[in-house]
Length: 423
Image (cartoon, one colour):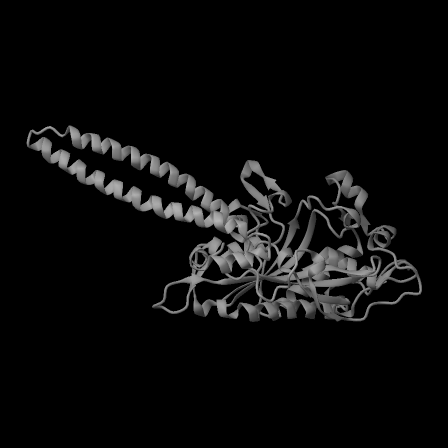
């Protein structure tokens, strides 16, 4: 949620920033609703005070045995004014809430211009892309041949874009998760297994609702939602709290299954396990002082790059364009892995600085000093390991002519085979 005081005091700056995201028009609607709300409040309060005064006069007149018809008529008129004012105020507040929760975060000045994935700016490329003396195959072809991935059974049991992972691929997943958790714990993130069913308030608080409702699985009977990332329950962990400065930074690493409807997705991305409805992920999350959030963003990116380097995955880092950011993010980096079968880089991990956007919605604040008023913290998130896509990158970049693939040494001590494939 944006700071309403900032929008009031500098609307043109806010509109110019949101224009980079195609959302400037909503600012004028918000300001009009806010102005009407501020007109109604003193009118209702004044009428209530006047009604109270006249009611007292009526009581005094009756004690003296006098008629008070004129005052009673005035009270009736004031009652109607109060009731109609409250009804309008209720509607204005509802509309104001709708508009303010629908506004995205202000983009960071360093976020590139543009509205699409292609407008991202490449910052660097790392690692050596593999060269093959054969035509590289995709992960599904390799995984199906080795009986590691069964999409047909997944579709039969659960519908399209669900999969069974089997055998050594399961050991690879568990090795990736434990490797990532050990590494990020070393970096100061406390491991957490959070709930993956959350109330609507948690999704509104993190900015995934109202905008992304068609991407979220809902359990209407219980008024719960399946999360698409553990960012949601991790962010909500300190909702409605006032932290102290010495508690910050607070850093977590959540491991959870994630669920996304992926409505509208199509084409090659729906082949195999690249874009599925259920996947596992280790997600980093940080609560920091506002002055430290830019530094924390770079820190999370450095951890993601460390993981990719240790996994020996060739990748590039991109700075995502302002118009392509998710609603909560002010700035986002993506780490994209090289996918040989596609001959291009694809998103593997991301990290976002959401500044005070989520904290305002979640009422998560901190007190800089004992004698200072509390203010919103800044929150950030970053993917440590998106398991399915990481396995795709490992399978495709390390595939062999014979049909198998090797795995990086760093994973062997976590239970991963050195090689998966035909003997």
